[in-house]
Image (cartoon, rainbow, N blue to C red):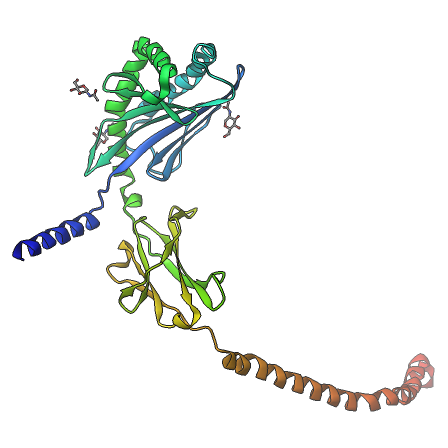
Length: 357
Ligand SMILES: *[C@@H]1O[C@H](CO)[C@@H](O)[C@H](O)[C@H]1NC(C)=O
Ligand SMILES: *[C@@H]1O[C@H](CO)[C@@H](O)[C@H](O)[C@H]1NC(C)=O
Ligand SMILES: *[C@@H]1O[C@H](CO)[C@@H](O)[C@H](O)[C@H]1NC(C)=O
């Protein structure tokens, strides 16, 4: 029993530790996609990502990096960034011709795509050695391991042929090795440091409830929307008192345009059982104080009658009474109209004939 308690305690402590730790594993990825349309037409697209946040864009005409965050240069000097930029540009100019020249040999067929992913990871403030992978039409072709290229098993003979050619380019392998084992880990740590304030910020969610499209007669879909939170980990549940409700449905956590996140959590219930349900939100920005939103009973028909119909009837009555009054007052004035004009004609004639004064 004591042992069990110790284990439980250890689990709780460790669990608590990892929750409070902001040094979650985080990855840096450079993605370059080359689309081969014909022997004379290719298109390059490149970008760089810190987990799901895009940090860099790439101008495929000039080969210039675009720094999308104020801290996207990390701690690299402009010279070192230009050096890396030139390496990429050279690769995107040279590598397509290598593929164009081996179309038959490598059994490639236009149109096709070659994707390159280069990156490294950081965990507990330490960056791992990087990796590089090439894919053809989305399936693995080659990777760079240790100091050399390896064909991937699913790439078949095509991967082996491409690999043996890449191995011959010694200078290329040396450059890749330096990028993966030196530049990438160093850049990632500098980037995480420069972007610390942004990456470790905490933004409170807003939450609201709505009724979704009814799942069937006599049933309600209760939807709890949670939006604008950062970082991504969040806990949301439909509750009755302290009891989590079974059958809660979670949407994907979707990105907002400002880098925060959105989640929708719904629950189908019998209309009669909706009362007393609440949506509970737990997030690191809330300082241990969960947000709780209570589902409010839709107004009963009696209330609708009182609140909507009665005032409508009263208003209609008032309008009718006003209209009758208006008619009663206006009619005599209308018949008076000609007689009112008569006294006005002498007035205008006095005006027209000032000589009479
Ligand atoms: C650059 O990328 C855009 C799409 O983002 C594409 O339309 C264009 O053709 C590309 N240009 C080159 C030279 O790859
Ligand atoms: C990488 O090289 C080291 C020695 O240089 C070796 O011990 C290790 O097994 C290699 N790893 C892989 C994945 O080939
Ligand atoms: C950038 O920061 C990393 C990690 O703190 C460090 O290893 C590196 O020397 C710094 N400077 C450059 C130019 O990489």
